[in-house]
Amino acid sequence: MRLFIAIELPDAWRAAADAARAALLAQPTLPPVSPLALRWVAPARLHVTLRFLGDVHAATLDPLIAALVERVPPIDAALSLAPAGLFGGPAGAHTVWLGVRDDEAALAALVARIEDAVSAAGLPPDPRPLRAHLTLARVAPHATRAERRAIAHAVAQLDPPPAHATHVRAITLVRSHLGAPPYPMARYEPLARIA
Image 1 (cartoon, helix red, strand yellow):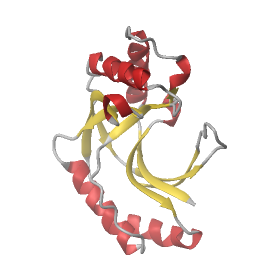
Image 2 (cartoon, helix red, strand yellow):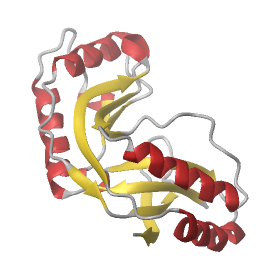
Image 3 (cartoon, one colour):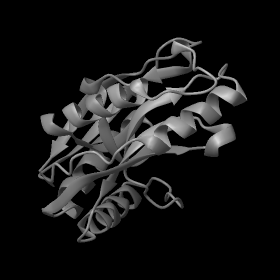
Image 4 (cartoon, rainbow, N blue to C red):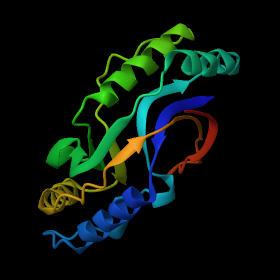
């Protein structure tokens, strides 16, 4: 099973992400960007991934859920949206995102507890630091270098989104069912919600 642990979003964040998408599409770019160069994430599918687990054997599921319940205490993490950015740099842009701000470092504490639970369930550690974000769009593999630079320029022109502070009350263990190539659209199945 392909799994990840995430924060589900409030409606205000989904609306802000949709507004950012509209603003990005309204940006003039030279050269023009093909409508097929960006694959947008539907607002209903947006989330903040706290820990990507990848392929996990089904036998690990129950110990993982038990470890999350036991080792992740309630943490009241106050988060807000931050400016947009992209992964891959201007010439290699592959993901457009909205940042997530955590002024009190509560999210880092939450991720540390999640990592402890994942380790207790027998899964390997994740050496990468968390960079909390909402993925707005993925740049299509066939996008040209010029289109990637134009996308990067348009992202840099976006105004920061409204803050829309929210409190994290639960984390969700999600199973991702991958679609078929060439544009696999994953289907997400919540398996457990831990308060």
